[in-house]
Amino acid sequence: MKSFDDKQLVSEFKAGKVEMFDELVNRHSRIIYQTVFGLLHDHHDAEEVVQDAFMRAFRGLKNFRGDANFGTWLHRIAVNLARNKYHWNRRRGSEVNLSIQALADNPDGNGEELPLPDERYKPGAALEKKEEMQELMQNMNELSDSLRETMVLRHVHNMPYEKIAEIQKCRTGTVKSRIARGREILRNVLKVREK
Image: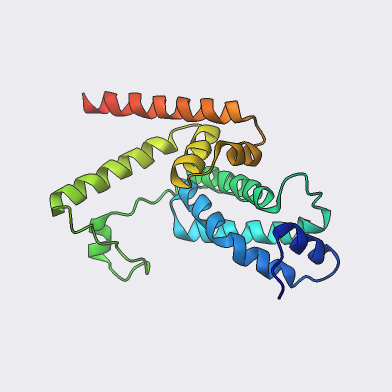
């Protein structure tokens, strides 16, 4: 297959070559999965949302006008679906916190592997770092949707402000203020808990 950019692939797809969508999936599935997992913190939910995002993109691509590039449009779909899944999980109380103890008690229970700590850390330091990260992620879940999504896109995926603004359909200044506000809230929460 010739090397096409996303715009050409979309054009070929609209012309009836539906197999071009496979290339779009190959190009974007990893980053979409990472974004969704960063918002949901659950592999199964992330996989479900990514699959749903690609299905919706497939069905809607014939009407895609190209106002944004395909990747941005797909991110927007995935982030909206992840937001819906996040709220659905919270309403039903199905948030699951995975602990080291739970994995030790049932190592084959969910098929996920426990990542080994970096050898540079002593076991106590690795556990402390993991607990700090869990606390930070728990605090991130308390942020509003727009703040949490902005923080994940910027700090987990290192997206530039301009791309985040495209995905969230807002101005770059709004993205910067959301990041500043999110950092401030997290900093204050962590200070209160330290006391």
